[in-house]
Length: 349
Image (cartoon, rainbow, N blue to C red; front, side, top):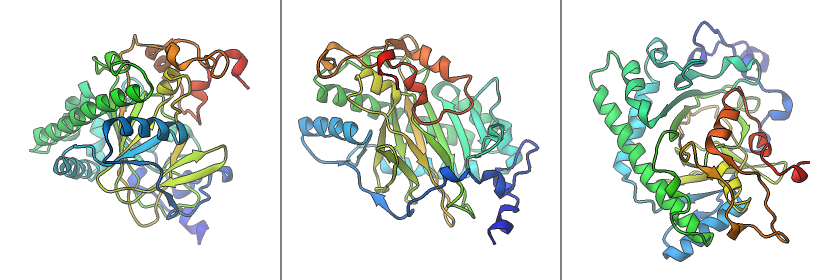
């Protein structure tokens, strides 16, 4: 039976002349998911506490897990539902229409069905990626024949603005919880040149125990705000070997610490290696909003977070542009290999 499934054509992920079969998405055995998809961890949920306690809870969760879930975020729920509906409409367009907004080697923004250039261990996912300044042009290419283009773009821009505002608040609270000036991070985010949104749609998969939506990786950005749906599929790596599923919580956001923020805080807040598993019966539509500083921002831990005896400096100074440019030529980043290049030499294994 499994052999027959592997020979099936995957219409929803075949594009640009690539006729892909299920077997093209089967990962090498060491990458197969090994936990029950219904076995979710609650992690640290942050809700109605006073300001000081919330700041402390955010820092504590970021040290322990590399992420936290925020329930009382004050982002309009009706707007979020409207945004999700528009995204489903985009992905439901015919493939030939979605490819009008296809990303290319010269413009790594827009739509793609999986990543055939990987050759093996293909991700079971459709992806739409944009930055704030490109969202209107990309959507107009998608929606050439759709009358309500401006409605779609207005909804997306409203969502991105709301999350940008939320992200700045979270940066201030993390800085406060770390004992730093509240604007320590936010003063580096006046420009939005690198702020990015990525929508992943994972179709139902006939072999979820042998395929992955996305393989193990950490985010290079500073902070990621993830909107999950109710299906679940996010897994984080706890320790070196244990993958833990993260339970979806209605009307919440998941905040992932990125590599840049780990280096900025001298490892106090840690970026988390994570992956996405797929579901045999249900599609999943998470949305990641990536916050990154201006290109010239210097990523260097402040003296308050460095102690020569108990917590010596771990990373060499770099700029966000340095880090981003190092990543651009790479087709695929596995684990935290991107950040490790900035470890001070005597700390490298």
